[in-house]
Length: 352
Ligand code: KG4
Ligand code: ZN
Image (tube, rainbow, N blue to C red; front, side, top):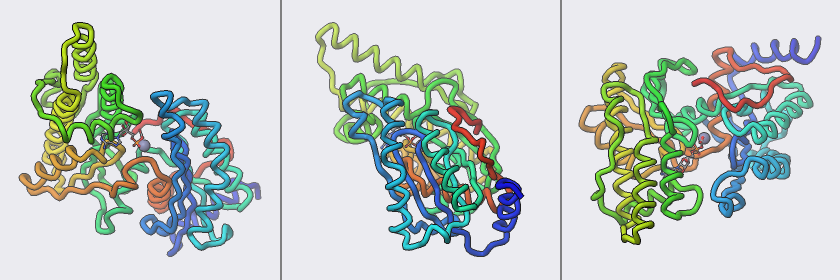
């Protein structure tokens, strides 16, 4: 039997196996991460090597630099994760890897390393969508959480409202028609001269500001679950440029606060409306922007008013990490999904 035929048999056997231990790999952007995870929710280790300091001087992620740094880091991170988990490689049941969406050169490092590992250990390779990983970060953080629920997915690459009917069974309720929320946070931070990544910097600065500038989001998407953040981003950029050109003073903290209030209000009101539309009494936030203090506060308040239970991942599982990929992979295995052969490659875009 060739490798893939053997893997089909092993993969099928994992569906009924009581204890499944996975190694998962994430390298879609500027974090090299490997985790060892048991039964989808028990994190035995989760090592994250962030390249933030390396990319900061460029003001954003430089894809080629990201790929090179993943290459130098990945083997050591894998060894560290295995050793921190206190297991032997031979105990691994499968290798899971993010195959998209993300920077293709960065993804390829994780995918190729995962393929080599799976082949050499003679265990199945599971291809995981990064977005599915972000949703699964909540399963690690909340042992009681199970579908169905509504998920507000807010990252640097995605903004969407999803009805999670079951594990790996999603209905898209709405998405952004232009920029992702994280992208808007990062651009606004940049024009205010804040370091990369901008989202957490806006979050910090906004705490010292007032909501006194009346920035708005387009009203054309009212009544839908779609979002548009390109207009507010451009309004802030123009505001800053105009004031700078005229030598007029403004408060960056007030801009940060006003921008954040408007964006988080839009995300919150549509997320709550989506729960009522889908008939769900649980709302889950996922993705890097889910780390935003004000967004979490507003979602929590809004949910309380409507009798909805609100969940957010603990901070370390909110931004990119491999544990969330391992959790998603576990539920994919249990549903017979995701088995990949050795032709697997990185994909810059993956549909939700
Ligand atoms: O999920 P993530 O780590 O990577 C992607 O899959 O894109 O999200 C990164 C995004 C960046 O745009 C970053 O600025 C934003 O999440 N972010 C935040 C916060 N922490 C991270 N945005 C607002 N407030 C934060 N506290
Ligand atoms: Zn991410």
